Length: 204
Image (cartoon, rainbow, N blue to C red; front, side, top):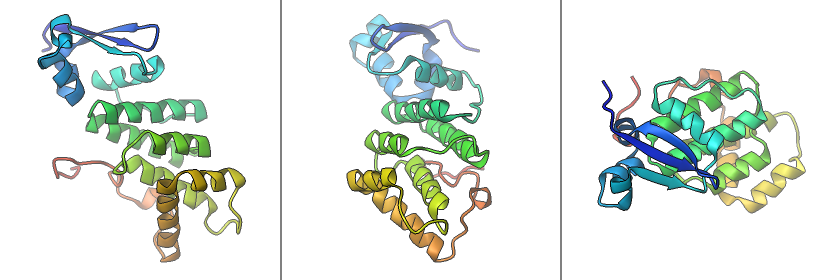
C-alpha cells in the first residue's frame, strides 16, 4: 500500500509537473533517493527539476515506475523516445528500467518494426557509458543487417564509424563473431542477453 507522501517532478524547459509517489521514485531510482531523501533542498521542497529532459520520454519512465509493461516501439520515432528513456535510466541509476527498455528495443528488432539509424546509434553512444548493454545490441543488429549482404559500407555508417570509435569497436567485434560462426539471430539468444546486473544476480 502506497503512502500519501508525494513529490513533484518538473520536466523540460516548460516545467511540466508530474505529481508522483515519493516511495516509488526512491524505490526505483538511486538518483531520486539521494535527491528526495538526502540533505538537499529537494528533500525540503519535495520537488526535483529536470529542465534538460524530454517530457514524452519521462512519461514512459513514469509508466514503468507504476508497473506498466513497456511495449515494443512501433516505428523510428518511438524508438528514438525509447533510447532517450534508456539514457534517463543511466542518469537516474535505474537498472530495472534500462533492462526493460532493452527488452522492448530487442522486441522491436525482432518484429522488424524499426532499426536504429546511424543518427540514433550516434545519440546512443554519445549519451551512455561504455558498459551500456544496449550499445552492444544496437551494434550487433547493425552488423547483422550488413553481414554477407554487401561488400561496401553505407556512407552514413562509414561516417558514424569515423566519428564514434566505441561503435566502430563494437561493430567490428560483432562482425568477427559472425565470421567465427556465432549465430546471427537475436531469437536464438537468451532473453536477458543484454541485461545489466549490478548485484551479480542473473535473471531467473
